[in-house]
Image 1 (cartoon, rainbow, N blue to C red):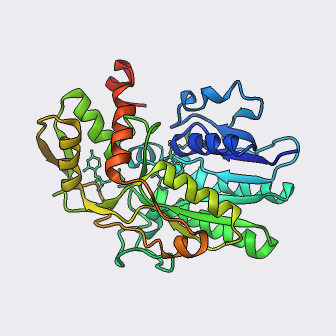
Image 2 (cartoon, rainbow, N blue to C red; image 1 turned 90 degrees about the vertical axis):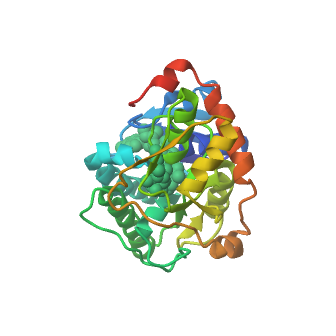
Length: 320
Ligand code: NAD
Ligand code: UDP
């Protein structure tokens, strides 16, 4: 019998791509989600697959799944700043209680568990690029703290289960990832800019646009996560694309890509918005033999085509 994997956050952007990948690799996939920021349409195509089962469940409540479990991938959590600012308590709970339930379930089933951490644990970094041995610079009481600290606690809890119970744990620190199935209205910069282009609106750059990000295409991210899960490495690993650029330059790229003559308008920078971010991926290269393959030009073309084909109703939906 094939291996069984539980994926939390299955109806979300990354979770749904993980479901596809594990189904393709021949696993039995249990997808779990409470649909708070996800969209069931991301996994509907899997419902007819006999190796896929969906559980509509909030992981901050006790998790029960019948039968054997080989792997758990814990991806449930709001991930965009506007989502976690809108639902701050749920964000703290899914990173803490939700992770505790997933770790408990993994212990009970003897399963290996991988948790989705984030570059946000580095906060507004004072070290550049960010390598895994940097401890970060996070404002615990700022608005972003609800996400950053939940994820830092998640890492601590996971390492405690690893050390105390001898469990097999994996921690991926995901840097900004994009691609099809992001929610057009989730407020992250890529769907925000593309949505504005498609609606003929001005592009909203926050702050003076000199802050940087490094964007990773989803297929590269999923490959990195897959390799990490199957590795024997229990320390955190950064997965992201080191190709860094300013948000101003990115806005110009979007104008070129969409062939529109939009203007850039400047809005207030959100509190604690990190000024620079670039992953140091030396560890991922050495341990996993992984590095990103998809250029921003190619990844953005695929992503733009995806958003272009959404319905008018999706395009005009402002709130989730
Ligand atoms: P997403 O919002 O698209 O997906 C998250 C999913 O989790 C949603 O389907 C949501 O409904 C579900 N969820 C949230 N709370 C839940 C709960 N209590 N119980 C069950 N399901 C719940 O976000 P995403 O971009 O796919 O992010 C997935 C994971 O990856 C998150 O843990 C996020 O922190 C992490 N991550 C993502 C990025 C990125 O660039 N996409 C970067 C860093 C970390
Ligand atoms: N951003 C922007 N305009 C927008 C949305 C985001 O200028 O409409 C900026 C945001 O302030 C940040 C960067 O783009 O500096 C990336 O934002 P995103 O929310 O995508 O990711 P994160 O801040 O979590 O890295």
